[in-house]
Each structure stands twice: as C-alpha cells, then as structure tokens.
Length: 445
Image (cartoon, rainbow, N blue to C red; front, side):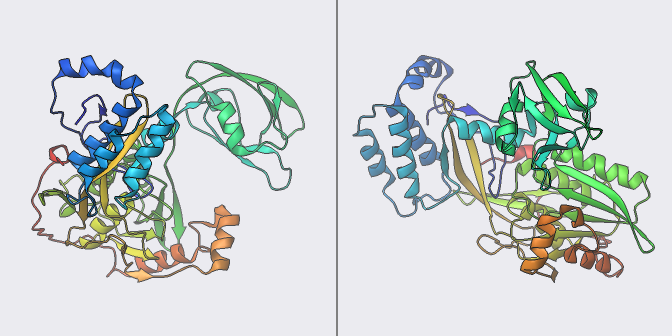
C-alpha cells in the first residue's frame, strides 16, 4: 500500500448513507520511502492508479473482490499509459465498478474537497441561509447564523440580496449565489441588500470559518406535555456538540419528553453517531462492526446519557447509515419508540483516503450490525409504528417546511400520541447487553 495518502485518525471521518466511515490506514513502508516518492506520485497518473489499487487490495471488505481477479485488474491497469490525470481517473472508476459497490468510489479533487467540507461541518463564508422567494423571485435571507460575520453586520431574515461584489443576483440560482459568497477565510465580500422598508444598503463583510448548524430544536407544548423537538440533518464533525447543547437546553426548559427527527438524514461521521447514541443511552450496545477477516468489534454506551426522559425517533426512507446506527441502538435497547417509514438500509463502513493530487478514495472496509445482531443492509430498519406519508402529505411538507414537526405532520403527530402512552419510549430499568465494551478509539479495521 502506498503510504503517501493522507491518513485520517480512526473513525474521525466516518460517513454513511450518501456518506462514509473512516479509519486509520496502516503503512507498510517507512517514512523515508514516503518522502522519496511523494513528488513522483504527485505527477504520475500511473502511480496514482496503482495507489488506488493497492488501497483496495489491502482494505476492501470482500476478499474475493466480488469474484473478480483483482491481480489481473492491476496488470491491466499498469499495462496502459495515461497521458493525463483525467485518463487515470476514468480507468480507476472503471476498475472500481467491477466491485459492484457504489460506496467504494473514487473522487476527483473537487468532489473530495466537497466531501471533506461537508463532513467537517464548516464552511468559509459569511454565515447566512438563503432561498429564492416564491413571490418576489429574489434571493432572500432566511437566517443569519449565530456568531457569524452576517449577524455581526446586522443582516436579518427577510433581507434581499440584490448584488454580490457588484454582480446583480436577479435570475441567479441559490447554488450560484452560494459559490460567490463562499471564499477564502479573511477575504472581503460586498453585498447590496434590499430591506423590508424598501431601503438599500451596501455591506462589506470579511469571510470567516462558519460552523454549519446541523441540529435545530425547540420546546413544544403538546397538551399537558412539554416536548423537546430536535431535528438532526447530518452527522458532521460538530453534530455531537450541537446535539449535546440541544438536549441540555431543553432539559433546562423542563422538557417532559423528546422527539428526535432523523428523517432525510443521509448519515455522516460514524464517531458522531456513537457519541450521540451515548447521549441517550446509559447502558447497552450501540453497534458491532465486522471486518474482512471476520473480526468483530463492539461499541457500547458508557453511562454518559444526558437524559432518561421518554423518546420517540422519526425516520423515513432517506434515513441512512449513521442515522440507522443511532436508530438501531435506540430501538434494540428499547430506549425509544421508532416511528415513520422503513429506513434506507446501508450497513457498510468505509475508510476515506486523500491521495497526493488532492483526489480521494472511499473503500468499504467493514459491515455493521445493530446491537441485537440484525443485518439491515438492503433492508433497513422497520419502525415500531409504521406510518408512511401519502404523496399529497409529502408535497405539503415539502412546500411548507414550517409544518414539519407540528400536528400537521402525520408522523410527528403519531409520535406525540405514542409519547402519551407510558408503555412506549421509556428507558429500560436494567439493560444487560452481552456486547463487549470497547471505546470508539479502540476500533480498528
């Protein structure tokens, strides 16, 4: 295996679903050899091709490589001459397709940068969320993020973005505007804003690193219950910190019960899912992983739960990977009642490598199972209370997101009904899991 790939610390970059799960990789070469070939690898498409092959050869979870002759694949790859990196990228992708595993994939430098930015939970910009207003057809600020340059400059929800660095935004798409607003930390951007009083203002802002909010929450009065509603959009590097703040704040507001909404959550960092599970569970297994050699590792709760109040979890067909790890742990330990639609069904773990030219590789390295030993791959998790939304209900929630997490949201409404039944969502009095206890930092693949 070529050690010049950047190696991430174990479980630091674990994505699942549209995501992956990362581990450390082990080099079989010394550091002197690494330094001597780094420059050559940077400029050699064929060396890059072989590096990808070596990583898959040493790590891929299926030792039969989907019944492919992986050695013959290497010979074929190295028999060709590549006139450019792009030709090498094509050859790499064609070789990986033979594994018939969509999660073992090659990413060009832009794709890899996007992935690492997503999982870091940070962007360099000014800290706003915006949308194209349906009525005015203008880019409009939805929210200025806490402690961001935008909020410090007085930008507010409802402000219209008329120009970005002098470029008019009329007919501009949100994605295109986002690309213009994001930029290197410390650089300056000028926005022309239209205010609700029909005035305009030009603001100069300095871009900064922004922690992207992945957790939103509020306290709801539902009958005689005070329900803490928490929505988790993805398992980024900051997700567990944000989840901890949410639970503590809702505890401080005297919540009687919780609803954790994982609908539409495609996954993210494996370590984040473990940390968040431990916020809800005092005892019991969280996840079991099995590697290529059949070696299993178990991760358990460690008596660090932040609440023992009743809990309902909302899921749907887009709740995947890390979402399924968390849901499976809460369901198998009878810590929560799970409500909604069948989940996505991804039970594979990947390692992620940065390659010398800035591209990246994700390799499936392990299979995971819920604490009860259930294999959810291609099956998903069946909710305790199955309730599928109709097309009209999905359309209504999609066009009016403010209805999500209200009594107009059928799955949320059913969760509130379940929480009123004390037989549901109560933590077990004594949970004697047979899983072996290890720390997350001890996991090795």
